[in-house]
Length: 408
Image (cartoon, rainbow, N blue to C red; front, top):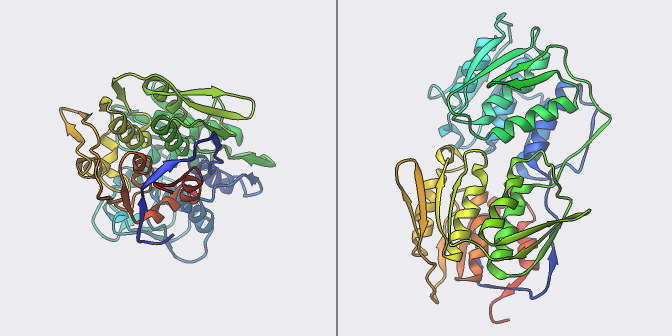
């Protein structure tokens, strides 16, 4: 589906349904990098078909000098570290939005280790020119933990191939810690010597030991939209493959939604979602799971739940400024998303009406998918619906299969 729009005036299919999720691109993209550093012999099972993951596969080891990662922030950051350590002279660029997303913290860390990286535009931002790596002899570095965990993960993954490994001291408040822990566990699966203690990540030299194969889990972030679907429509949904414990921090969605109206039953084959009673008010700190914030915000708007959210600061530098985008689009539905001293409050009820509300997606996949379930309450017109290809290419196929046009 290309740029355009899709009219959503939907009612759910009145029966329990099953949804097969895409593989986790967060796990997939890390495994692609780690596997390449380990020699590339590992067979990746259930690989992600998300656009970001496809780009990662295509760009690792690419012979051409210029790499265009489009809007894939994770791909940009991970490939910057990968190419720096591989002595690959590259230019890494992306979309205009990518050129507005800061990367200076990562570049400073890599430069301290011995990388040669030049800014080709505004200092601190893409595009980058990467030159030859000359090890500096420094193996203790500091990285801020309150901006993006991807900077930290990018340096972690190259640590085992550095002559003395690396010791990363995390400073300030640490956000998205589950993603750092995901990187650590995946590195261990590939034989790396690594541990975290007192905000210090110690990585031993010696490289990786490649397993014969590695299977990627289904994406818990993608599951969040079906939690919203079940809570709004009352229709149970079964999702195969999801399990606990999980490498993915976004599996916390099960606990979040248990509080506000969706029960999770874990089975041997996956999970079953069903509606339940939920709170009318909800407070939550999203510092470690920011990708769930849009789904929870729109769900609370749909259910009339007053929600106070904290830990959203990193949303300013995502595919779009997600806070501003949510404020603008929710206001079209008569819902307020107000900022108040490091917190944001959702209040109000979605207004009914005969005229479809136009929802901008701002080239952000999560805007499209988070708002889609609201079409069971109010007719929506989602602009640029093809943005879902970034993480969940078959989302609209699943959505249409579980619903039908109103009045049909």
